[in-house]
Length: 303
Image (cartoon, rainbow, N blue to C red; front, side, top):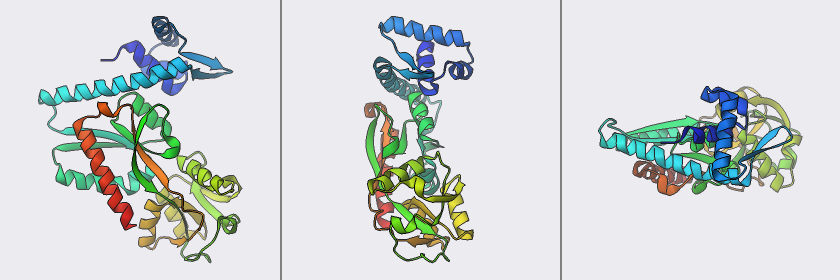
């Protein structure tokens, strides 16, 4: 059981706002301040501080957040085990979060196949942003999250899940369809991408930067809310896009889009399972995680 003042601190870590924390917890803002002061007095250190108008965790506050995440995760695991012992839950439950691409392209078939082998399990999955996943882990609401290398939260343990790649795809009628073109050749093409603040754009930016290209210099014509939406746009519009191999493979197989081979796009993009502490994972969560890794390896080898 987690102390209510600890819950306030962990919520504040996620929101970085006293006002939002008070709204979420349905308490007053002075109560939030009182809870934080109590913890600071208890530990004898400052846990939060302001730099300008932005709230930050002090090094001691970040350490406390990280360690409390482990405790919360273990507490949730204990609660689940007790419920199973008492027979109040006939299912072995696993809860995890992932980004939209994994949630749309890889996980549905993987989870379905696992359920055929283990009908006594209940698998609950969230599609969430990097920030939302950090909050879900910190609050102990998921066993683990699946994130790319650029979104691994500080202080979390991680374990490799799969390696994916960026691929360039286009409308099948595009002059470059089925051909080879460098990033330099593509910088003048009309591009369809995820919305500007999507995590996928951060991945693209990082990969392009390693080859000396600025993603912001490319001509983004349309921003779409998902990889599936990008496929639909490409089917109708003579443009290109940069999407993950796992999405590109299915789209090209269905004839929805065509590939453009780009020599620079050979760097793997690592995806990890992240969690506060692996020792806190339940047996069923660890078993499902191992199955995911084996399943994903086989799927990626087939692409």
